[in-house]
Image 1: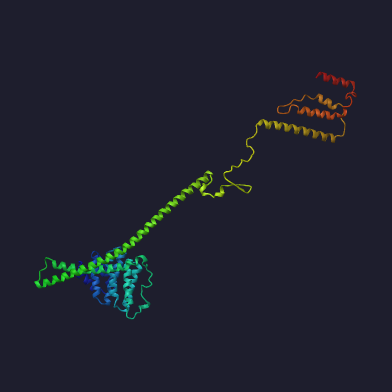
Image 2: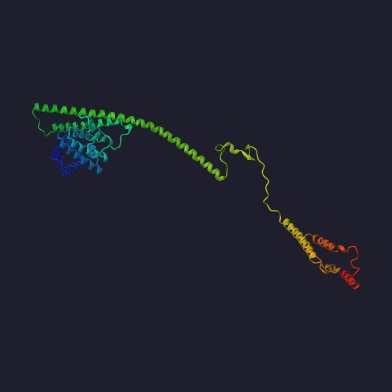
Length: 418
């Protein structure tokens, strides 16, 4: 079936409360989504002309269409229904029975939970329903209060609350302007169609008068829509100017913080470089008292130079000194060892050796040669002292007076031979 106003009205008239009927009509409507705005206007007109039960079926149809459009990410009908949905929901809700009102509330709650419409549109719908509840003659809301009084939806930010009424006014004005302008355009096209026969002058004049009135109403509706939209833009500009001023302050603060961070990072790198080089921190970054010297618990100014402490030299002495010292020490150790051993022998041996035995043994020994590195006179002086100490008891007399003549001859011969 081709899309025409009569076709749309026929589909809406045949709609009933069964799910099959609602889904079938919704699919046909969505197939012609290019005419979403026109379909929404015809749907609203049909809803206003219907009874309470028929209005509920039309609300179910709108619910099916907008939810399927949201799921398929096709915004044609969301855009088409957004300006009129608040007025349509209020029309269907007002004057309905308690059972029908609860069903309409449930549909609106589903829209809020699934975020079908934008927040301002959803809030406009809930505001219209709440307003109807408050204006009831009994003064008591049904079933414990308004369904949206404690809703878990997203609340409007405080700075956006002044523009919410303006947005609602724009939605209403846009709905009225679209409806009246659409009707005026349809009547105008019909009147100006060249194939249409011109009626009698009195009838023609009446139709032209009706067209002028329709065009005037459409013009007035569009003017109200323009005025409401200008007020909304003015409110949005105030919010924009306020946010622009705040943005300038935040950008300045950001630049200041960025400069401070860069300065601290540079200073941190300098301190770390100083630590790696073994240098002290910069004078302006350290405690003034830390630059003083501490000597025996007293503070001295940093300008006073302390004397360098005496330390042992690390350079070893020449090798000759080690050789001389080692030889002298060895000789002294040898002399002391010989004297100690000789003393022990004298103490442990009580017998007296024959007179002249040591002299003969000393004469029969080869001459002592001094090696390099040993003291030249150390060994001779030691032996001389040893002989003198051994023969000290015999120094008062002649040591050879008790020897035989043959022995004396032998000794003299050996002495003369050497």
